[in-house]
Length: 364
Image (cartoon, rainbow, N blue to C red):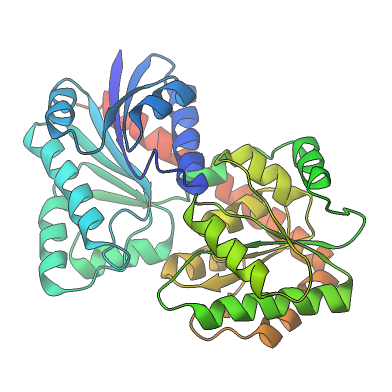
């Protein structure tokens, strides 16, 4: 039996990362149904119960070392684990887990990682020293590949694939339809989902989203649904934006189940997203997307589906966002065709990650 340890931002009620974990587990089990998987998690009990895996606490280093000693492969990913813009603590934590695996003689793989930004000479040196010793790397976009080379990481095999979540199947629309109707959303109207996040001193950005939402209700008789992917933080931000609006909007109050979010988004005609995995969920459901960037990963994903971001989170205006949304709604058929074409390619690339992991475990 192949013994796998997974390290990532799991067990923290983030729908995107939970979808990533689910996708990785599914892909690994498809490739090798005889594998035992242990997930390092912020909530081991919940993770073990939800995914039928063994799980250990993210800061229980004795348990992590004990588990690594007995495993065949340590998989780090996916997601933006190796960046120090949002948190230098998490950056060094995930590097430390990699270093532990290397010291214990375990095969180590970076799985569908989104790399960077990594700022500072010393963080880059430390990352280079550790990551050049892993066995295999897959990254989810070309920008991450370039970032690795800029940092000086060239020794492992590096393959450009796609975000693990892009391997997910579309969700059924019935559940999302029922949930939205219970919230009083009239699905006969143009329904627009907005997936924000908090970012720095973001009062102007929140006002811009509220302004655009109001304008779209006025111009399109639209229904606005705020979709919080990371609980409870995003839910608070959604409520703040809704409170700034003149018109009524709905704040979806669900859990972090990816299929539920995809089903809800799938019943909408447009998603305006700051969260990467909200954009990915919409793309999977073939719903047109407008991306607002706060991190290179947003630009990279939009590029991968042949689109461009509307604006940066620091300078987006309500009028600009409204104009882009109206244009996207008017051109939705062409956008859907374009998304469908790119997504079929990205799905195949996403499934290549598990194939690489499987090959690594059987290689000498």
